[in-house]
Image (tube, rainbow, N blue to C red; front, side, top):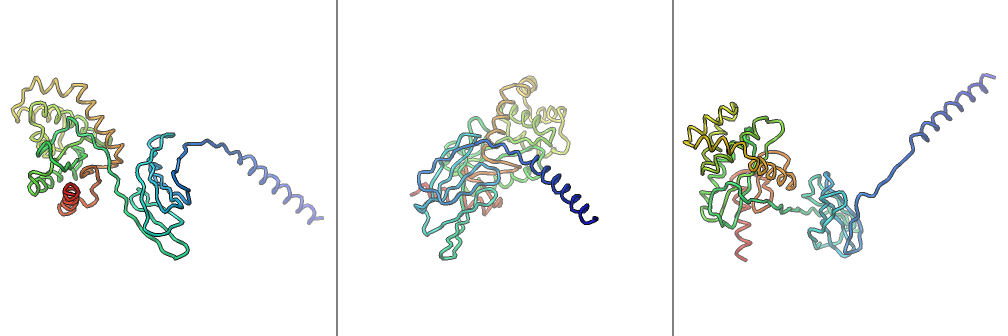
Length: 287
């Protein structure tokens, strides 16, 4: 009798459990995008941010697709492989691909260098205007690490006085309340030909920034104070800072400082690492 009651209880519990599972099993689907491959797809991989899609084809190629929007995908490049592969995986940022050939048991690792479009129009710069190599620096005036980049850039320019132009791009982080006002102040000084002087002064005082400090620094640089005040509040400068920031977001800038050499992200942020990238760019131009 007890056994029969126990079976009934267990059956009821099982029914309730299965009912709960059924109640949670409603699935809604929505097609997010469609990728058009020019070959016959064998396997795919995607970067962790969902931007880069890699399609391995039976033709021995890897297609690199850029998904910049929910439904906008464009083929950026195609890599021709020098050996067979039937599986592909990607590192989180998409800058390394792992290609496996099950028949031979080999795994090849390919480094992928994305060339970003960095808009330098109207941005403050040092060096020859028509220099063949452009080092773009995305920076935040309250970032302690950014303060050290100036000396590094001076070393780079000393090594390449005729070949390198250094461009400053504003990327004020939300966690730094005075980073945006500092960017406005620096660009206001830029209109009077004193950007780099203001740039250096702001970084020297990065732990003590305020509207009053910007005014003090501007006076110390001998700026026209009426013009400086007007320019600091100019919507056009605010729009320029916002455009810099959006350009950085599009280039996958996630922190500061972030540097690019002719659109290629700098991963080794020392002098020798940057010089190697500059030399590589100059070598390409000689071919």
